[in-house]
Length: 439
Image (cartoon, rainbow, N blue to C red):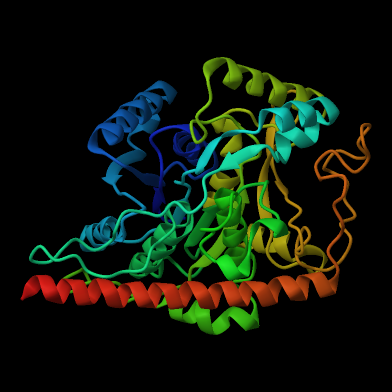
């Protein structure tokens, strides 16, 4: 086969899961791709200092693997603030105007939690009653309500412009990424037809149907804005191949390159996917040191009790996103279509000996693969010895029926329509603002 240079973009790479994704991406690329292939890893942070720190860590990691492999890995740091649409657009314009020929995958990882603390009585009670559920599907996190991002449009001639609010968590976790991927379409369409580009959303195992309120699309009235945002990304990714979302998706996938950018051919249509990293400890939620250590121990105990989602650390938690970015189109389609299935939310799983692997995740209303059939494989751990259910699913989980899947697709179509309307509205505002500044 001809040598090929992969270009993969990872957002939110300064620490935690994002840094774990970048590190594992380097390792798994060198392990799985032919020796003549190279990888250009583009990663984003929120500041020059954080970008330099990440670059230093990744360069040290590459050098520690093997000198013979170091010339196969190229690193590039980019700055973006995902709660600023102007910053997001600036990143997209820089990449499109650069010498980057294509983007083979974009891993949309960056985000914020929006939590203010923990409900301690509830936390202690649920941990004592059901440690597995308390660590995997916690109900005791306290989220801020109604927090909005800073204004998107700078004043023109000292005059502030009217604009609707954007929820801070919604913008950081969903809308900023949604706009970024749209503006990067000229690079995503350029991948070979045998291996279309992948847009990979990093979701959460915690997201469930109760977290998303259609009447509160941005989650501004929710005390679980983080989980709301992750359920939203599941709707976007899992329903993108359905006829009811076709119009919105076609609109989203079309984006003209900026004026003066290199001409690139449109070869293959990008695909959209979702993953979840299991349960790990990162700085996305601020905890006192002693509380962090106690939480870490609780997750380890959950793993020893058989929970397949207790990844604990960023490196094993990164396996699902990295696998999706590197897996071949034929292998992925085979896994997703087995048993009459559609799309799958891929999860990072782990066993008691810390051996990580990729497994399908049960999504409320969608099931394991959108087939409407009971999932026959009991890989998720078999019956739970405590409080019923199965170790990898909540004890009250139910297999999604065909009616459930149809309702999920209907809701997904509405989500796509709302996101497209919001995108178009904000693109018009940004364009109008540009014209005012040029006067």
